[in-house]
Every structure is written in structure tokens, then in C-alpha cells.
Amino acid sequence: MVIDEKEPTTAALTREELRLVYRRMRAIRDFEEKLAELVSQGTLAGFLHLYAGEEAVAVGVSTHLGDGDFVNSTHRGHGHCIAKGVDMGGMMAELFGRSTGTCRGKGGSMHIADLDRGMVGANGIVGAGIPLTTGAALTLQHRGEGGVSVGFFGDGATNQGSFHESLNLAKVWNLPAVYVIENNLYGEASPMEYVTAVLDLADRGAAYHMPTLIADGMDFFDVYEKAGEAIARARDGGGPSLVECKTYRYFGHYVGDPMTYRSEEETEEWRRRDPLPRFAAKVLEAGILSEADMSSIDSEVEQEIESAVEAAEAAPLPDPAELFTDVYVNQ
Image 1: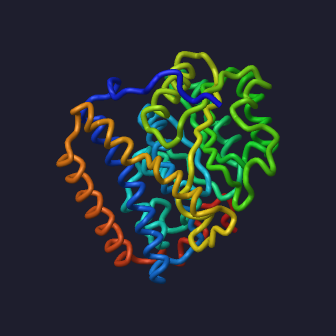
Image 2: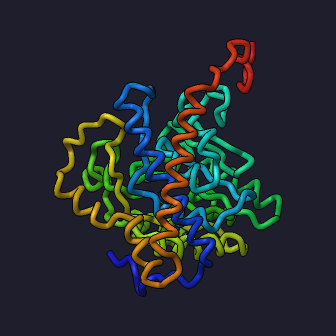
């Protein structure tokens, strides 16, 4: 497997853009760690799938996107939401099931959406966001405004029929879609190599004559560069691409997963490639951001998350009278 032909650099981004990149990666990490803490305290209930460790993928891709671009997510969707600019206060309230939540407390962790930000939604069904990505790309193609539809999904979803049908149709119709595989090595507790015949999942794009790229999903700059190529191609009418990001989730499949299926040595090896310190090292070496810059951002993010928790706990539950609103059938 070859990920890089050349070392990615910081040159393509301004200081303010890099500050935003760091802020969003830090926000994802701290948001997820706070959720794990709240669950362990018994303060927050629900079935949560945390994104910590994969920050470089969501932010590396979404840095190229605007509110007019669409993103479809997975059951592990908090990181994609934050990277796309969804308000963390609204997300936290949604997780607490409060009326001030992004979906008014009715969606919860696996169904956060914010159409104003182009976040079509997280999705509790493995692979279900892939055809939605394709449909959203068709919408953008008809609008003719240069929008791009991005779908994030895991390695396990590439064994679903919806993956193959969607890629085929997107290529046939030359849709402005970018399909992003977050290959974190495990589908729940099953190692990828136990259930998948190919090592590099990006190879599957060749069956549909689709351009493919493989990125180091623990390196923001590599993801940014590879995703940028695919997104630019889609904007310019060049059709869909498949991007595989090799990454690793630091928590289990869900909060409370005992993780007996992987070794401590494996986890420590991947943690040595942590995307946040790697990002920090590059921007410090380039002299673009300082330790003080990042420390200030750390403090701001910490306070924002603490405020989000306080506001969520104080917010009201949804009114029972709204039970039949925001649904397709209300009788």
C-alpha cells in the first residue's frame, strides 16, 4: 500500500484557516471525550458511537466544503457534524433529548442533521447514507451551482449492496459525488480482513472506472490534499471519486465496548500517530501557529463544551404535543 508520493505541506491554507482546522479537530476530540465522561457518570444515556481518533478525516474533507455542499454521515457522526459547522450546543442538547436540540430532541446521536449547514444527517443504518449521498449529488447536478455531495462511511459498509449500486449509478450519471471510506480496521468487532477480500478498499472503485485515492487518515494534510483533488474534480464536472482514509477509532464500537477484539499494543501504536499532535507539530515547525495560539483554542473549546452541557441539562424536554410533528405520517 502506498499512501504518499510526497509529503503534504501547510502551504495551501492561511493562518486563519489553520486555526479553524485545529479548532474543529480539538472540538471533535473534546466533545467525544466529554460524552464518554458523561456516560460513565450516568448523566447521559443512549447508545453512542464516538469519533475520537478520526478527526483528520472529517476535518480534512470538510475544510473544502461550504454550506451549499451536502454531507451524509454514519452512526459515528458527531465528528462529521462538527467538521461541517453544526453548532455544538445544539448537538449536545440533541444528545440530551431536549427541545433545543438540533433536531428538537427527536433524533438523538445517530440522527443529527442540520440542512442549513448542508449536513443531511447521521444515519443509524450501516451503508444507508451512501445512496442518500448519490441522490443529493443528483440534486446538486440539476441545480448546476457547483455543489458537491460527500458521503462518509466505514469499511464494513463497502460490503453492502447499496455501496456498489450507488457507485455504479454515480459513475453512469457522472454525479458530483465523493465517497469517503473511513477504514478504521473494524466493523463492530470484526477485523476488516476477516470479512473483506481486498486490502485496499479503494481498489473497488476500479470496477466502476472511478478515480480512487488513498490517504493517511491520521494526517490532516494528507486527507486535505487527497480529498481536495476529488472534490475539485466533482465541482468541475469530472464526476465521482472514491477516497479511502486509513484511520483508527480510539474508543470501542460504542461507549462501554470492552474492546476484547484488539490488543493494547495495537491501540498504542495507532495513538502514536494521533492526528492532533501531528497537526500541531507541522504548523509549529512552519511557524504559522504558536503554542499560545493552540492553547487559547483549547481553552475556548473546553469552555464552549462545558457551556453546552450546562445549557442542555437546563433545557426543557420536547412537548408531548409535538409527538406527531416532523414525521412523514401524523395520523
